[in-house]
Length: 123
Image (cartoon, rainbow, N blue to C red):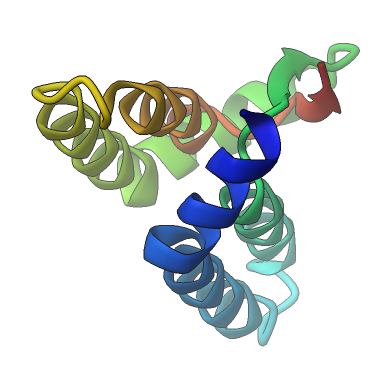
């Protein structure tokens, strides 16, 4: 199921999400201040390509910088991406076939909301 889900996700949404996050990451990496945010966009791009069989875990604490960057991310980008994934996940969960894809959208929403101090690990 994991492989089939990843292939379908990649064709329908994954490639477009990953390209969008990669372009946004490149734009953010133009300035030195934007590099940490660009790295998080690349993390979202990698996770959005193949979300089945992977999950997000909390990494060792980065202290006050981690919290500060997460708050800044939340205010600038996170809330919009989070709401988009919530709406997409709710719409996908309407049908039985869409439920696994809706669950993946909800997993992506948590990373999009608070990405600093999180890492993607295989199940």
